[in-house]
Amino acid sequence: MMISRGLFGWSPPHIQPLTPVSEVSEPPESPSPYLDTSAEAAAGTATQAEAEEEIEEPEEMEPPPAAVPFSQLFACADRLDWGLMIVGSIAAAAHGTALVVYLHYFARIIEILRIKREDQFDRFTQLALRIVYIAVGVFAAGWIEVSCWIFTGERQTAVIRSKYVEVLLNQDMSFFDTYGNNGDIVSQVLSDVLLIQSALSEKVGNYIHNMATFFGGIVIGFVNCWQIALITLATGPFIVAAGGISNIFLHRLAESIQDAYAEAASIAEQAVSYIKTLYAFTNETLAKYSYATSLQATLRYGILISLVQGLGLGFTYGLAICSCALQLWVGRFLVMHQKAHGGEIITALFAVILSGLGLNQAATNFYSFDQGRIAAYRLFEMISRSSSTVNQDGNNLSLVQGNIEFRNVYFSYLSRPEIPILSGFYLTVPAKKAVALVGRNGSGKSSIIPLMERFYDPTLGIVCMLFPYGLVSSCYYLQCSTECP
Image 1 (tube, rainbow, N blue to C red):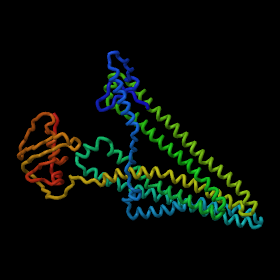
Image 2 (cartoon, one colour):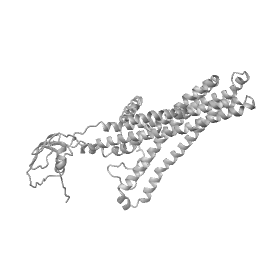
Image 3 (cartoon, helix red, strand yellow):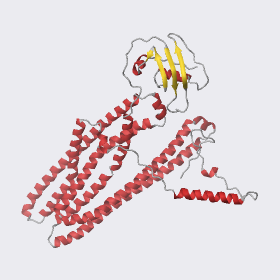
């Protein structure tokens, strides 16, 4: 585990000091002859027993992150979106089955080589035209698939984004005091919406496309030569396992590289936040060195990711080629005993192999689906929140003149509920009068104006302006001007 070094001799209170373990570790002290060794032995035995008990206790597994069902991702879809998704699904299925259908015609082309030369030209012409028609259909189906799914994904994520912002703007200030400092609000708007859009857009079409290739390849393979199809299915799990193992390693390496980038970002944030102190200690070179050292881990992880991708792809296609060799060796006996001809064997062979590759490619979309479901849970949880400040009841007055009264007000911030700010507070501000609030630091002087503006609600008590005001009506007519000394 790499521990970053500090940029200068001290660290702010809210930032963990970046000091290597080797600099703070101390050598063990030599035992003193004046100490009671029996007491130390008893204490050591007790400590060892406690350590053994801790080791015996099984570690609790972290629960998986909360996620919504996959069907709930389409909660914001309207009729047009459902129509686009249906059309895009049909086009994706047609696009996926086109390749294995071409293999069926390829078997018929090989079969033509067995007939007389006089009839070959006409048969070749007919099959060539059919393959051209299939190519035109594939082009149209692929364009419809991608266009429909991307368009409906953008429409649905736009609705989710607008609802999220609407609910966010209706929250009171206590919500932002509690949740607004950890970056969740910004990350949910920027990154989570992109994850949902990726899960709703081309990933779904790509999944349907590859699953259509899988089922179409199985059907075409058994129709042409069921013996070769069965043998090919026996080698299919090895091809799928090669791709699955590589995806597992890629996922772990991706998490590691994100952690390395986060560590480098924390060093950069510390340097920028305290740039004056950094300049005063003339530690600019050390800051750059620490940042560059942290990025070295990302370089290593990037090389490992490229290596795993290359090995995974090589093993996948290597197993596919070995499977082809086995099927051709078995097909030789089928041709010798006249149980099948060469075209049927070749078609069954490649159709089942393509179905396995299609299943492998379809499995790569599950990661995007899971990330989209997790991101949707966070966004939908925010959208389902209700704000106590939204209230349209009451009368809207064009002119308000009168006293402002605080009657037995108790108040504490939601982020610090254990610290009372106001306790049984009474205040009357007459109309057209100036009132000065004087008190010690932390007595609640600066909290009076936010309570009047309804940025916060009192825990107990009431704030009046001639009468207990409504939530929205007061915001329309209340204006506040603050001055700093």
